[in-house]
Image (tube, rainbow, N blue to C red; front, top):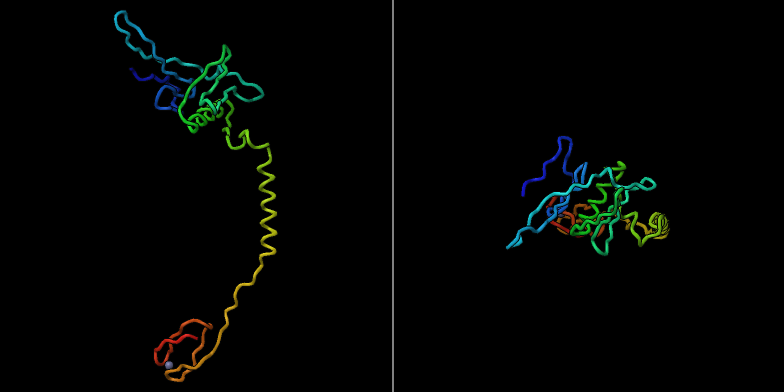
Amino acid sequence: MDEYILQPNEAIIFDDGERIKLTNLHIVETVTTWTGLLKLVPKESYVCHPINQIKIYEGKPQVIYKEEDDIIDVYFIDGKKTFEIDGKKDCQKFVSAINELLTGEKLSFEKTSKKSIPGSKFIAERLKGTVDAFKGAFNNTPEPVEERIVAECPSCCASLSGIKGRIVSCEYCNSKHQL
Ligand SMILES: [Zn+2]
């Protein structure tokens, strides 16, 4: 199949590597039609859905990712169109890219996850911070104090000084001793 010909002001933003491409102007869908009399022959062609025909409601493009089916419903002025893209990440990328094109804002899927109540993550983090602060206050075990001592070198009787328990080497006779 011939490559999709971009308009002079058009650039590919997303490509699922299969049937769906997103440019700054269109959702480009590869469709297969079967033709032929004796033997059906697949014929692939591109169908362009202009981005500027996507409905926007309350500032949000009506592009709905249905996670359980891995499909994306796009509501155009003249009707709904469903796109299938493999993989959650690519679906989110596609939806986010359309949002960015139409509103200038990226869509964050973490914030709109249906499992979390809006703001609960923030509260949880605030609480966690408080708990950590308490932990910090009560967990104030003092650092072990390093006790410096002076001892006598068993080999040459010179004085050795250092931290208790450490091994030091005598600066006169070079022998090593634990303090
Ligand atoms: Zn010594």
